[in-house]
Image 1 (tube, helix red, strand yellow):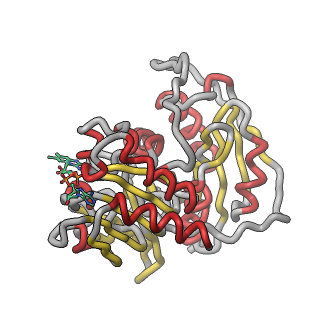
Image 2 (cartoon, protein in one colour; image 1 turned 120 degrees about the horizontal axis):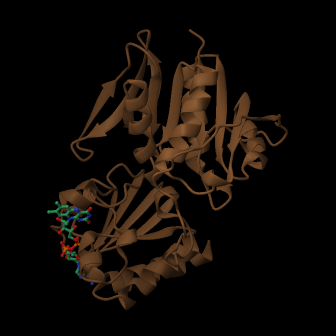
Length: 321
Ligand code: FAD
């Protein structure tokens, strides 16, 4: 059954986040040959429409208003609800990002619809669109489908491959005017922590440090390796609690969930709460001087050794490639 499916293109610092393209790929499956409509919300975002076309959108709509310059739950839900009202799609896909996690339940509640959150795959099976999502901190997976009404899901970044980019694709961006009113929150200023390099939640390579790095300076060899591999640095809560790094780097049940192609855990014991944030990584390498460390149970490759010897050796070898 061909469906119309909307995808929210998530904009950060003037660029589309990769999860927007992954959402288009998921929407193509849900659309089953129907139309995938990219939706852009912001104050000057329509120029990003071309990239949505290049990743497979069939149509792009932009809601522009200076009140939408920064994400606010009221502003974005008003804009998205207005588009849903005019487009009347059968499906809606958002990224399971900080914004998606906030916005999707609000939209679902307003519409009285169901929501499958944090999906890592979607397939058409047995006449239904079956979404797979991790449960119990990634120890099990459940398969869910919506039987009635809007097929609404958020997808975890880095799990559903985007379609191949077609540089030649382009199209018009339809402007939709929505009166944004009664905002209960207004963003007055965005203060960013200085973050180095690649965004942790979308990184293809993550080098994570635990209490075993022993100090803030102990993260330096990890940063060097991350730089050589074009990756991001992450951390266990042990390292954050010890003040070796900022909590924005924390990976795990109460931190970020990452699914990179390569995850290198350095001096991390592998507590269940940490595994909840990284065990779905495609290849896991663990470096730990304790051969009994739990992290080796989920690792594809384990190196028993001192991270301060092993990490610089890896960096030197990768530099040669
Ligand atoms: P440790 O457990 O102390 O492990 C350090 C490891 O480093 C050891 O295995 C040691 O052998 C190794 N090591 C030491 N020196 C070296 C060296 N020179 N070279 C190589 N290896 C070395 N944790 C998270 O990470 N993320 C979460 O989101 C999270 N949420 C939590 C939520 C709750 C409700 C609770 C109760 C806990 C949570 N935790 C979380 C904490 C978690 O239980 C662990 O305490 C934490 O993950 C331990 O961090 P760690 O592995 O860095 O430290």
